Structures are given as structure tokens and as C-alpha cells.
Amino acid sequence: MRASDGAGKPALRLPEDVVAMVCMQRELSRPPTFFNHVPDACLFGLGGLAFVVAWLWPSAVMFPTALRWVGVAVIGLALVLIAATMSALRRARTSTNPIDAPSRLLVAGPFSWSRNPLYVAYVVALCGCALASGSWLALGCPLLGFVVLNGLIIPIEELRMTEEFGDAYRRYCQQVRRWL
Image (tube, rainbow, N blue to C red; front, top):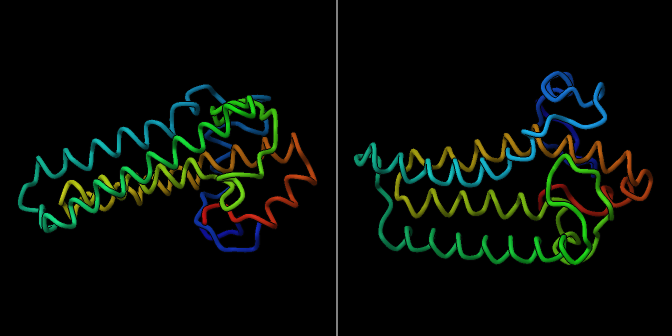
């Protein structure tokens, strides 16, 4: 389903009633703790799946060696972005868990060009894994990671940020896009 990302740009999202049903975000002061593990499961699970797919279906491995090395470089770039984002979060002494109450609204560093730079890095890393695996089937991994993060995790975080920071967060949403 298409919806606005807060900055007036269309974004792929699950219907709000599905998100509410799954995490009961309106009934609970805190969504279930398993949501803390969803982003990392997307990164490591789908990243690993990209290579498993190449191993299970070698006939789907079609990318040239040069493109596979580009994938390795893309993974390296994603790791740098992950490190920069985690460093900014730690310096601000705010949680990296999606369901924890935010302690500060970060608007500088990686957060000046994306409201979700860590998830941008995760999807970039998944793209790198898909390329590095050499399998065209693995290209579904970054797409699935994007759908889960954008449709389930980010709406939970945005709800918590809006509750915690109100108009300041709404202004930030108008100035900085959800992804890029």
C-alpha cells in the first residue's frame, strides 16, 4: 500500500491496522521485545540467505566477477555507514533498539540526510550481499529487507518518536526524508 513518508513522498508501507494488530502498538505502552531483533535478523538472516541461495542454486549465479567485487565494496561502504550511525547513537547515549523510548532527537551527522541511516546501511549491505553472491535470485533479499523495515519497524519507531518529541519530530520529518 502506498502512503506518505511524512515528508510528502510516497513510501511502501503495510496498512496501519496490520501494524497495529501485529505489534499492538496502540494497546501496549511498549511493543513486544522480539521487534528489537527484527532489523538485525533482516541484515544477518537475509544477508546470509543471499549466499545460501547462490550455493543452493548455482545455475542462478550469473553476475560477472567484477560485479561480485563491486558487491564486496558495497558491503564495505555499508559497514562504514553502520559504524558512523552507531557512533552517533552512542555519543548521544540513545538506544539502538527500535522499541526503546528515544532519549534524544538526532538531526546531525548521518541523521541530517536520512531519518533512518542505519536501515539505509542495512539495505545497502543486503544489496552488496546479493551482488557478491552472484545470484540473480539473491536480489530479492534487499527488497524483502526494505519491505520489512519500511512496513513494520519504521512505523513503530516513528510513532514512538512522535509521542516523545511531538512537533520537533514532525518538523524534522518535513526536512529530512525517511530513506534518502
